[in-house]
Amino acid sequence: MSVVLAIITAAVAAYILIYYNVFRGARCRSKAMLNGRTAVVTGANTGIGKATALDLARRGARVILACRNQEKAEAAAYDIRKETGNMAVLFMHLDLASLKSVRDFAETFLKTEPRLDLLINNAGLMAAGKTEDGFGMVFGVNHLGHFLLTLLLLDRLKASGPSRIVNVSAKLHRLGSVDFNTLNTHKDLVTGQSIWHSFMAYCHSKLCNVLFTRELANRLEGSSVTCYSLHPGVVATEFGRNINIWMRLPMLIISKLFFLTPEGGAQTTLHCALQEGLEPLSGRYFDCCALHKVSDMARDDGLAKKLWEVSERMCGLS
Image (tube, rainbow, N blue to C red):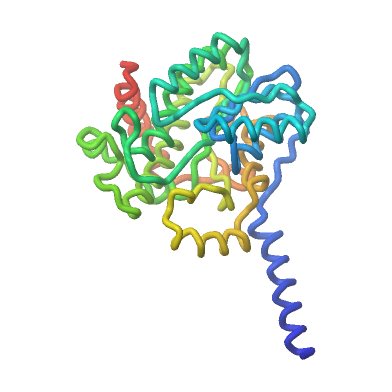
């Protein structure tokens, strides 16, 4: 019995050691306060987005939860107001799967909010299907909707500078590529709707996030706006809610044991949004609150420029 107890104790100790030193991740060290500043966080009703919005609200920011589901977003806003005592936390409807909704959000925001200091493009999904405009769901939400949103809000960000744009990407961008022929023929990054296609579409879309950030930084050079992309870590969130139950169950067990909490997953986002002295690193990619290398394809300025031009056309901006 004592041997079994010793083994169990050793296993628990090893797990705690590994969790806190490997899986728990780095922490944002910034002590910045944000009184008088405004932040927009997409997908802020749950997971990393909600944790990000909560931290920004604690620092005194006016925080707009830009979300599709009004009921969940208003509940999240209530939770954040209650926990922080910051009453300037509110919901504004945004469905990134609809370019009209993106335009409506931007129009409403620009009419009602005099400044924008932080734009956190956090929302993301991995699911089959098409957007309202006929684009692949993953491509439309993870890249194209955020691309249009950013461009529509860019003048307000410039007027409020120094300001920052933070694009939540993923390490899986390393598996991604951009096939412009597929984009032209299918309005998507993949040619099918299987689970595998959805996974690859996600990888491709995360590469688009990094490329978008790179080209955006080039175009913002000399302005008061900087931008960053990042890997948040492997996080236990509702991200896999669209996956069938037999895949979700083992993922749930593994995530509870080893994945970051949403609060832990928000740390690199917060680092990119708040850390002083990052301005010379505009356009770069972060992981664990530190600068990291990206894939060779993600450093291709020609690819980034072409993706920008194609995205402009798809959004009706050119």
